[in-house]
Length: 499
Image 1 (cartoon, rainbow, N blue to C red):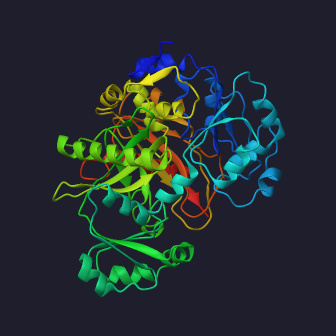
Image 2: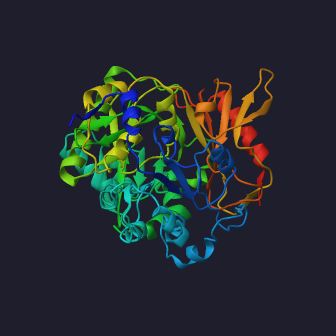
Image 3: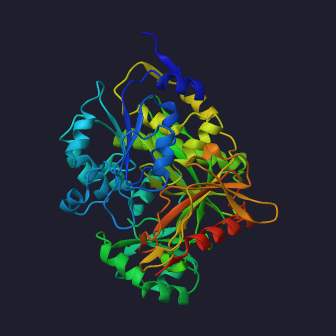
């Protein structure tokens, strides 16, 4: 049998046209990290627990043929939808509690049985509860390996792996969280340090310290004490602070033929326009591709790290599929330090998939999915894919956070769709949309990803909505652009988040 050779966007798209399985993006909202690849797939549907303003837009594009709305305050419930609240209340604590509720509903289970070919279910990340649910059904599951993710989410363990495979690591110490002595730390690392709890995420367990005063404030804060109570390992990592403006990131995929990886692009971290210091430091706020221009020397360091870490995960852990690789770039030495591996899809999706489609790059998410399908009628040309997956792309996006630890409600509403910043500075709504593909120029921006109906409740600095543009929200100095400041101000004013 002659095999399909997948070497670029066109050959990847052509191969996907041969796949007859139905695909389901299963997530809390109809707009999720899992869409963005729907234009490659013959039969793509969405299962969602909550309603949001994009639902109708996506349905009009024929991308949803089955939708449910959770019976949650502030959300609109569909007319012909199962009431998920009873199932939801029966499920114990789990990060995918809403998603599990979907897969426990008898109507959903019966619906997934009607297809001739096995349903392929796409997940952002796997949890214990989902693993238990999967055992009851004959579905093809696409998601990160739960056990591997658990190991590599630990920042202390990841440091040891970096040293084992001879990649650069900033100077650090591992100590008990009960024995933190500022003077001893300064003697080892200097007066600028970063304290991190090993299994924290989104900046919640990261504390950047510039002085003894910062140190004393940090270790007595409510956030620090909360992390100590959650930290089962009782150990923390303290690292010498790397002078940097930028926090690059790249996508990597372990395949049976080798390691495939994207170019470097920016993470937007601690943007003051959208996140308050009380939430933490090192807080992920979005991604920037438009202004991402790195030297060949820096790119070479990134590619080397992707190959080494990907090969290690594949050979030592048997890992397959996608992971995100985070770096910090030392301003002085131009050393690119890998600092974190996220064994799952990351927050840059689905925008990243949409950008790759616009720029005719092979979609790394589509390559990830292939690793979970039991098919032997294709082969990946890894060298060609790695070449095709490089180059500058035009796009940027930001989270709009609720910016309060207390409950707030949006007293105003944003429409799901595309807005334009006019020459005179006014911002006006142009047209409904949920996709980056509908943006026409860099003066426009898209409001999407869970656009809330009026009076939706948000607690503890939650992400409210995303804004996306072909323009730029951040420059190469790590500063927010004037365009970003104007757009963010407009969104907050319109949402009117208040108690």
